[in-house]
Image (cartoon, rainbow, N blue to C red):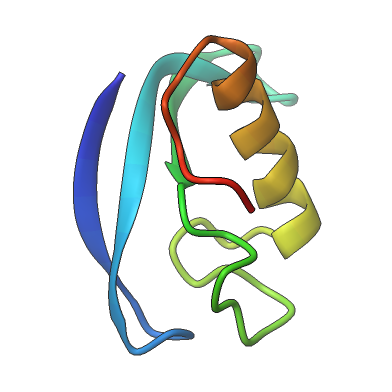
Length: 77
């Protein structure tokens, strides 16, 4: 899993994200794609929709839990 920095317009700052190769399956096509996970969800989220991934904070927390389940050294939400 690769870690990067991305600008979050909800936080108005750079946040750390992780890319899980093949971590997401499109429900319509069954195609697997990379999953982007915000490692800072819950720290300074201000909205009802993540501007990076266009998902709710709850969905992003679920993705973060999946990443943590893989033994990642992410921050706690």
